[in-house]
Length: 90
Image (tube, rainbow, N blue to C red):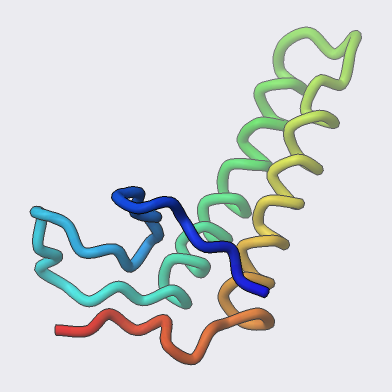
């Protein structure tokens, strides 16, 4: 059974129309690819900073897996659990 919101309350989601009209269509796959590329470029840079500075505590061991989990969930949201009506209506 679906939850019914009280009168006057609207839900906001990624496809919710707003006052800022998008000039280009939203492509979920392109957003994921950009996220993955940034992850693959930034992660070695983070580890390089760690290597060239204080190597007593491997602090990138916290950020790397956390960001990897974020990339994994982004992938799942775009390619595995995609909704058929996710395209923006114009």
